Length: 472
Image 1 (cartoon, rainbow, N blue to C red):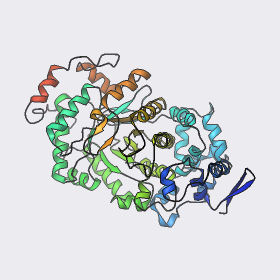
Image 2: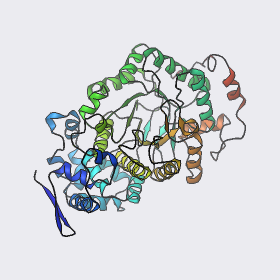
Image 3: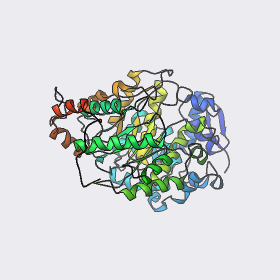
C-alpha cells in the first residue's frame, strides 16, 4: 500500500508499511527491541506517532498487517467486521479518532455500539498516540457486563479472581487458600486454579473439590481449573462440574497453534460448556488469558509489534463471548516488558484496547522476580486500572504465587481498592458476604472469621458433604 512518512527535526522519516509504522510508533518496550522492530530513537518514535495520527482508520481495513490467506485470526477480524457499526468513525484519521474518544460525544452507549465496528489494529493504533490519562479516561467510559452466577462489570463494582494455586495441587492446601480468600471478600469473578499438572484425573479432582466448596457454602460464583482446553473438554465428557472453560490465546494463528488450539477447537469447547447449562444468570462460559510478548517468544509474531498482536488476541476472545478476559501483563519477563514503567503502560494499553473492543477486561497485575519492578509499581498499576474501570484483578495469598513463581496482587489489595475508591464486589456475591457474616454493609470484613468457616478448615475430605442444589 506504499510507504508512510513524516518530517521531524529536519529529517523526513520513512516507514515501509503499516506494520513498520505501528511498531515504530509504539512506546518503548524491550520486546520490540529484542525483535528489532522498535524505533531507534525518541525522534523516530515521535515521527512515527505523527504519521500514524494522520493515517485514516479505513487504511486498517485496506492494508492487512498479516495476509488474509495466511492467518485465521486475520480472516476472523475481516469477516466479522461490522461496517455499519464502523460508519460513524469511518471518515476519521487515527488522530481524529483519539480526539473523538476523549470528547463527551464518546459516551457509554456510543462506545458500546461502536465496538463491533473496530478492528484490533485500529484500537492498538490509537492507543499508541495516547497518554496514560487518555487510556484511563476512555476505558472508564466503556461498560461491558457479563453473567454466569454473578454479574461482572457493573458500575461501582470491582471483582477478583481468587487464585489458590499449590505446587503439588494438594486439595487441603488449596481449600485453605480458598477459605482465606473468601474471608477477604475475594472470588466473585471466579475461583480459578492453575493446576501443577495437566493430567485429566487431577483436573477432574480439582473441579470436583471446587464445586464441593461452592455448593457447601452456597457461594454465588463460578469455578475454573486452568488446564488445557482439550483436557477440559475431556473432563466435560466425563461429567465433571465445569463452569468456565479456560484457554490462553494469542493474536496469530501460529501462536494459537503453539498453544495447541484453533478457532474451531475453541468453538467446540464453548459448545461443550453450554450443554452443561450451569450458569444461573447467564451463559458466558469462557475465560481467556493473554499477554504481550507471547507471539514473539513463540516465534509467531510475523514481524509485528507485541502490543498490536496483543490487541488481535482480543478479536479471538470477542468471538466466543467470554465471562472474563485478562492480560497477564508482566508474567513473561523483562525480555518483553523490562521494568515497572513498561509493565504499567502495557497493562493500561491492554485494558483500554480490550474494553474498547467490547471485552470484560481484567488484568493480572504482576511481574517476575528478575524484572526491574517491585510491588510499588504494581500498586501504581492496580490503582490506575481500578480508576479506569478494570473488571477484575487477581487475588493471591500474600501476592506470591508459590506454584507459578511470580508476584501478583493479594487478597488485601482488593480490599484497598474497594475501600479507597468506594467499589464493591458483584452484587450477588456482596449479598452472600453479608449473609455469611464475612463483610458488613460497607464492604469491610469483620474481625473474627465465622465459626462455620473455622470448622471447615479442620473438617475431613476438604469441607464435608455438599448441600444438594437444583442449579447444578
